[in-house]
Length: 249
Image (cartoon, rainbow, N blue to C red; front, side, top):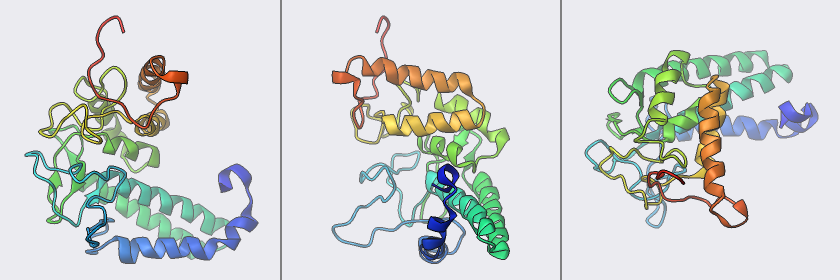
């Protein structure tokens, strides 16, 4: 909002709320004090998984076994990094230089920890999450794609990640799947385990653009546009199936 409007008066009016949100991240979001934000199912009727993929079976390890909480999702760490980077800029503009510096340092520490703990050489990607034992859930998914637009990914890891996200196991021809065809729980008709979500693809494409992968951006946007031609009024739905695109379609 501030980048678009330069309305510092409004930012000042909600600054205490922003700082409270940052406090929550460090003192409540980071359940075990390891520097990552996790979630743990507490309410009997609450969601088991508390990321954007909130299906009960959406976070698993390479064997297909559901991950035990507390779970640290890959993209959530990116959101935290981005939040602290932006908050650092706002603090600087509001004259709080020490807070600005501290937030910047926290963001850099998180970036380094994330690139070390979440990267998997075999996948050529970041894992979907760390489970309650801090064991990487080595599954190829779309989740790390959202990390690109936040800026948390080191440049040298961006290229292999982009390649992994756009290979035939992830890219159906209509978009990037939520889960790789190689995964045990892959199901192209599932809600989060192989389907294609336009909003997810849009965020991934945004990240591709920020890291300079324009041809891959066009690959995603062309695929979504082509899919829209088969949908009433060309209005993309929340999600559609992740079946392979066949020739002459």
